[in-house]
Length: 301
Ligand SMILES: NC(=O)c1ccc[n+]([C@@H]2O[C@H](COP(=O)([O-])OP(=O)(O)OC[C@H]3O[C@@H](n4cnc5c(N)ncnc54)[C@H](OP(=O)(O)O)[C@@H]3O)[C@@H](O)[C@H]2O)c1
Image (cartoon, rainbow, N blue to C red; front, side, top):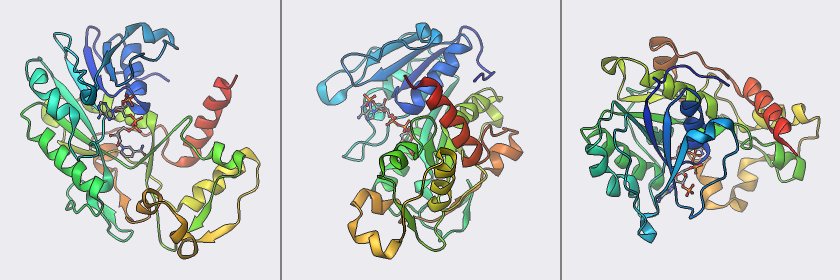
């Protein structure tokens, strides 16, 4: 997968080299940027791809007193970590002041569409009121607002459920752990991880005055989770589990699983895709699941 946008000589910091952070870092490195990523792990992941030579791991684990010194002359940054259990953002607490000393041209912050709360299946866009219904979304909104008010060139990207290779329902279906639950009228929004990477690179390449402070990154196909599970089963050629009604299973779901059903909204990507001209690689879960399955199978031992 190739992306175009980063100038040679660019120096990126990715706070949180997790699922999205690492994918973004590799895309920037592939274009010639040097990239520093953080992890809480004492041993960073081993290099697995050619562009990993341009990745440099820093240990950032504030709970254990590990605060990294940042490299000089960083041109770009991306903050991917969620608020902690106390609702606070460890990067705001420990890296904001060092980041102020850097000649940053752009700092992306990964937020969530949970900040819009429940609108009973209606559409939300970036001008919609924020009204988070979950405690973690309230904490998120506070962190997002603090980053936006930091005086740094921050752009916040509001994300729905992230999927991609290794984060599709294929394994659950194969192992018989998938649940086919239906709640009338309930939809979910999602985005393929490579469209997050693509949207970030698209946004940072725009002139600064054309970058909106807040941008939704969501695909074109909000739909029930029963629909996406059905398509995943079709791709695998396996049987779907028995359909369960949400009211019948709600009592058996963990608080975390239950919380995913609390909000119901459709997230508009009009600003990103029409006004700013980003073209989605995976407009729906159909193309996205097919590509993810192909990548998983290509990497399988
Ligand atoms: N997953 C979704 O469906 C979804 C949906 C909407 C928004 N989001 C948000 O989008 C962002 C990226 O998601 P993701 O799925 O790519 O996340 P991820 O794979 O869990 O990666 C998060 C990264 O943040 C680091 N991190 C977390 N807490 C930290 C702390 N207290 N101190 C230092 N580092 C910390 C992790 O470090 P380690 O590698 O050391 O663990 C990891 O590298 C997150 O903020 C997430 O909440 C996710």
